[in-house]
Length: 273
Image 1 (cartoon, rainbow, N blue to C red):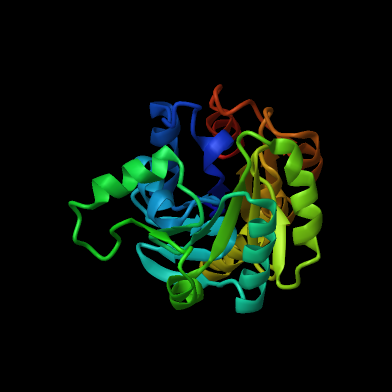
Image 2 (tube, helix red, strand yellow):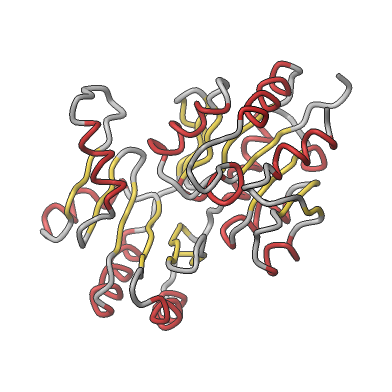
């Protein structure tokens, strides 16, 4: 092998099918590429606990970029961590209280919530009650001021969800965009992703490339959402999925098939192997 590539892929809408599975041929190709010396990492808005589980479905290398780039690790060893500033957290909390929409903050293994979290997270917490390890997933309400104050130093990123009133997110975003210390992106039509102003997937991809001494021209990134734009623009080879929105496609210099049609597999099969 003459060139070692760093390959970073978003999860939802990119690597995973809609049913949350990865095709066998995609998994086999990624592992073959790793055996050939290439580096593969997932790069997602999900918290580390959830991202790590998905990563293990396709790779044994343990590279994870989570929380939209606010946290990155290699085999559970922290590479990068950026938390939200206290002032930005409090302002975000107050804005969402005014709009009466659910707000969720994430650490590496805990979901902090203001309103009842989605069923997926409740089910994950139920499963984790049998796990006594350090990475046990938990849910914590932050409606009590003391609990909120005690835990805010762990907040890596946040998400606002508006399942039944998506139109309100435009006004929410205008309010959040006036808040210093945060960056507001979206990974789906019904959410807003909130992360530290100096952090996104691009900064984590850059850090991982620097760790392995891989220049940006040998970095390949895959994505479909607005929160992928930074890493798509940074990479020498930024690949948008066919199911991506137009602004995401415009940020990439390559296009592949949809996630349902194994677009990541098709591109890597032709480009590297």
